[in-house]
Length: 400
Image (cartoon, rainbow, N blue to C red):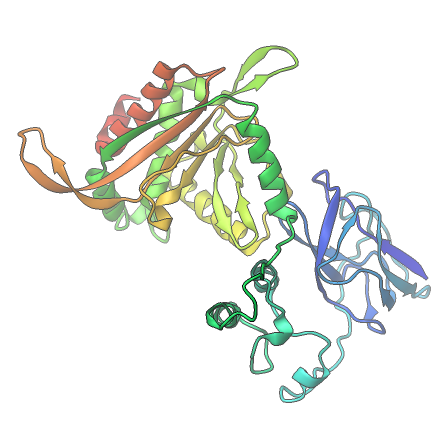
């Protein structure tokens, strides 16, 4: 009998939480069949089996966090299967081609599943939501199929409105995974880099109009160019004239390190917390390439499957707080970066035109935070002014 231990999946992993078991004791598995999903500080990862054989006892429960190297499951190996082993994840694992799927036990009829299942079925993001809300999935009414996000939210809402048995009741949510890493990183950033934030409101009517026109362009067919994409493009252009905001502070060498490429971090709110996947070499991308990359990292982040290679090495970050209806905010720098741009809600507001008339325009507020060790106030102001000028009149990009 062989033990399958939690590996380091190539991102400096220290610990991970078991999210979903894909096998039960007695199942027959082949090499590379998925055994379990784990949640790391960056994403949800499927772990394939390095052995062929019969699944023995599951050694870690769903929801339990364990350090790297902890035995997860025991498998009685099938010594009659000839496999060639070489790593598929850092630290462990054979692979075979083609990979074969494990034989699954027949599912009981839908009516009997609630009685026979050891725990309700639910997707990992739904389990995470239930955990954050302090909801036991076994208590959520459902039809025998997987528990939905809407069902969890409805149950939590009904419970919140029910009369409390005691006024001395509180809910405790364990801080782990993405939430833990984010808290540590933001605390370190806030108390290491001296933050300064500058604000600027801007008429972005022409940018909104441009986004609408680009939807009809043949070369952009199938690609959605949102105002956020145009903000990202404007930021990349503006960083050419303010490279200090695309830099980092090297404490050991007492040097400012300027980056020639813009590796653009994009803050994404997910069920697991805030993730900041990185679009590498964003400054060299065409508008179409940038739009595709932005849509891809946003989708994969929300699904919880961001590859570890996309989660580090950012040099500048943008965050769109406007999607929550917020006018503006004071963003905290991502660790190791000297600048971050927040974009507020784009809304119709009265605007004083050049001839002193008041007209309705699409307006937003930009906020740039920067590390004052690297960036002076004048440099920060020039950057946010350049971004504003590009969004006010996209034609200004021809001068860059």
